[in-house]
Image 1 (tube, rainbow, N blue to C red):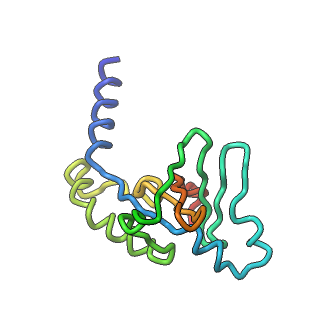
Image 2: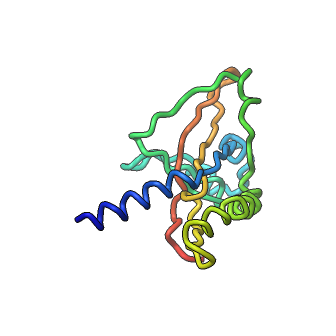
Image 3: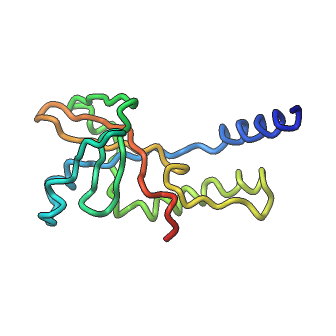
Length: 148
């Protein structure tokens, strides 16, 4: 029992060392510019577990119902650095570069290399509600356990 407790504390402590990067994606941009007519009507769908967002076939996210959404006044939108889904590969490289020393310190030269974006990013989608207001959804990436 003591051994189990020890390993849980080590894992918990290490999880605190590796910070996720916050990224903000403009869902409205993909909604307004989606050229796939078959996808366009299914970009935001209510599922039993939450709201599912599809960035025009480029990525799929879920905002669980238990997560709270927030609103942002248009005048504060510039406080959020918006990324495009096309930039994600570079953001992954940057995250791996930044966290590699922490992983090596913890595990040595042979360390676990994550490909799951949910382990790297705290992801938010921003959707235009009206001219004065945007909705901020905390989401997680779907289908991350599938190996490519």
